[in-house]
Length: 216
Ligand code: ADP
Ligand code: ZN
Image (tube, rainbow, N blue to C red; front, side, top):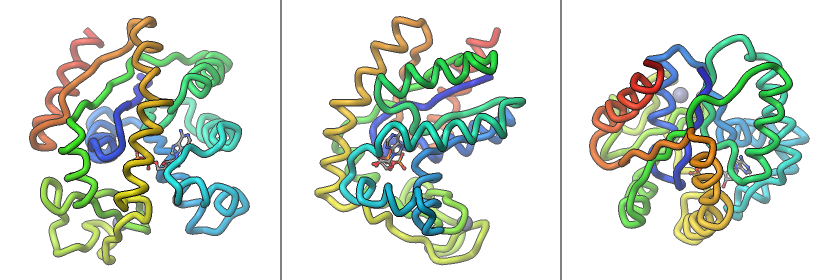
């Protein structure tokens, strides 16, 4: 099974990605996490993409394709979950070709929907672990211990792109570039929208309903 998660920044894709991946034994490809890891390891790619993440704009497609091709080469034999990729129509087209080339196809695109006010609220409370990349929300998905990662037990951080200006920019980019993917996947009969309101378990239940219904 190959799934992808769509939805604006701050909607809870990362949190749901963890739950879905665990439940269905999928390997997650989170391009945002992968890019942040490249930056923190100070790789050549990391140095090249840092400026884009700081501004909240999309990294050039070619750099994403490098990451995703590597990922596919290593994980083509199991179920996959894409979080944050594709993010524009060109990426979606190339993604389809990359999958085709290895005899795979996307099953579903699941779009998490939330009002803009709720999104801004969530981003303000978002924290992440710089070691394992796991994300938390201090209100809706808090760590067990005060602002420490459950797995790594190190202090959680606020993403540098979770500031008001950069958040606004990321939302604009989402509307301009990523929103057209709704039409793209609807025309392929793969698009499913769910409400991202409620607790993480409520949202997850909506997602499993869709996935299980689709498999049957
Ligand atoms: P969010 O969905 O909250 O914006 P992500 O972690 O998915 O967070 O992405 C953070 C940043 O990483 C984006 O603003 C963008 O600069 C970059 N990025 C992630 N995925 C992609 C992608 N598929 N194409 C281009 N840039 C990307
Ligand atoms: Zn951690």
